[in-house]
Length: 135
Image (cartoon, rainbow, N blue to C red; front, side, top):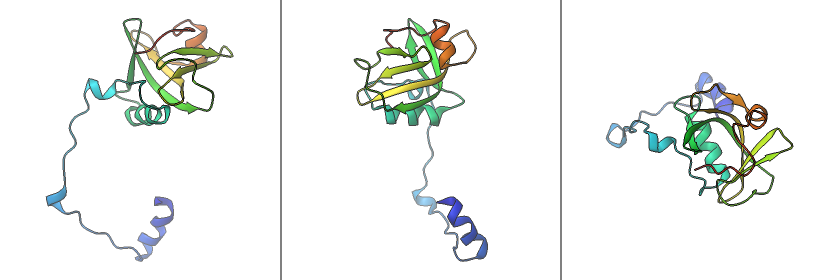
């Protein structure tokens, strides 16, 4: 862990090792296909993808032919509400999406042409509705 190693580095106990330039690689630029969420993956994988792409460019899904940029999400312990991509509004304030393995909870998102909203506002403002399918 970085928190535990930092004092050891500062005290001189740990020494830096130079990177072997022959093994170094360059990461390609992030493209639109890298941002698209695949609900055929597990909820844990999708939560990590959302976190990795936040705040920009952001992870995206399709909702009724519009782009939904999901800026915050987490794996939920609640059971999957249906087939992958199926949306369930729980307790009028939580937006749950079924994945291939588990349930993803959308915490914040932004529909194309609108401002970013927390999950409760997404559900109450009818941006995302019960039974919608994200793709």
